[in-house]
Length: 311
Length: 280
Picture 1: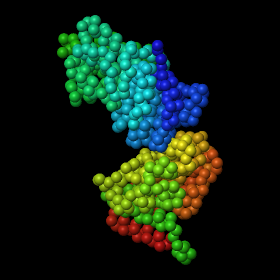
Picture 2: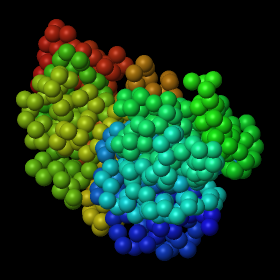
Picture 3: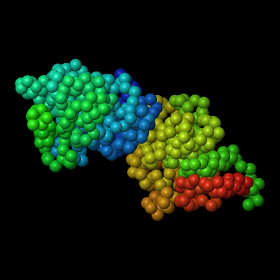
Picture 4: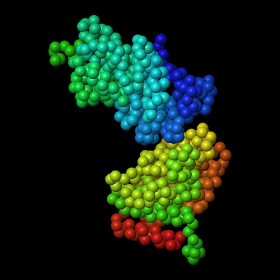
């Protein structure tokens, strides 16, 4: 059943708050938490108002005193507006603050470029000590929230907005370990986030029908990056194609290209949102289709790269 | 004049004088330092570390300790001098400031015993202080939190985000000191972005405010020891100070902001501090 990752996070946090008194949920008036939730969480929920730098700073102060804050804002505001506080107050001090960033990628839909986050993965994965994850569905989100309990430093979790479809049944992903959803020796399709990973799976099905076997990697953790799994998948393949809801530079495609250039030079093609601010109006699914972050595009990309003319 | 000369210096005044002497020495090192704003803060730092703060240099991880954040992190040389004098690390280590291999960076870092969190980019300290104060309250601790802000720093919007939060959260065990020396890097703060009426501004944000002369450490300590001044409100002490205080050839000049003292000016500064001390 389709479910919003931000809601999966919210609902999985509440029982954890009860079990772990050191956890605290800091809100910036996101609207994700209603009055009943706040009441249930008691003093472990605090709405600090619309002030994202302040949100990160207070979280750092609390974390320096032994608390584990889950801070809530949109990915766009975390990665741009509050970035300096994240860099200096949280990452520099290696504090266990969990940055729960909703409306990641194109999830903000018609709300436009002020609310879309197409740079957040590049920005967050460059910060020393920051763990960066992109759950592909609600179940993965729940798994990551649970796993965050054992994580020492800061964590950035890119979440969505509206419900997105679940991945076909697979074991729960583990932070730091890429998930191999399908194995094949010809090409590697690597994605992160709900629609890109589903597109990889659909494209692999289509390619298999033509006798092209694809490995599908759900690269849900951008830092620390699972070099080992990626390199092992890329070695037999002649091509790696990445797909993500992110500008083409610096995100998953960037991480894959950097890694393979050094460890196992392989041709890498990066699919993402074109190098421009979004002008199209529409919901999340419409924008994903409009910018062609689809299985069809993956198939076309593989075809043209593997065609004799391209070699 | 006779009466001032006859008055003996208080312990806090002697500490402030030693802080100033260390600051001047560090700013004569190869990298120089933020001299003017460290000298304007010296009496505040003396009051904090030798009267107000409930801290123990031997137990820097005591959860019940008071917290201090130097939000105007560029006054690091002042903080290092105060920490060394208070016994956090040997005073001799101050000579390593800014040199390769030292832990004494140009802005405070956690590697230095006594530094709670690193600062330097302006506008960060008050939100951190709110976090400390909130954590203390959650844990049921009486510990207090102090944050030293520069007046130029008040131009950063994030200061006012945190000022709103502190009042809204009723963080009465949080105290801000504003080092109101009136100058920033290139000139007078009020010529660049007027801050007055400063006390009214803080009051309108829901803070308890005291506006005082900023170079009598005993008087500063009296105010700070007495907090919270109004139940349910955070406190702000606006300390009216002089940038470069103690060095007549730099006092009240924005050129004192960052200085590498030449050997000649270092000697001049040392003499000036001795004279001030004798006259004090």
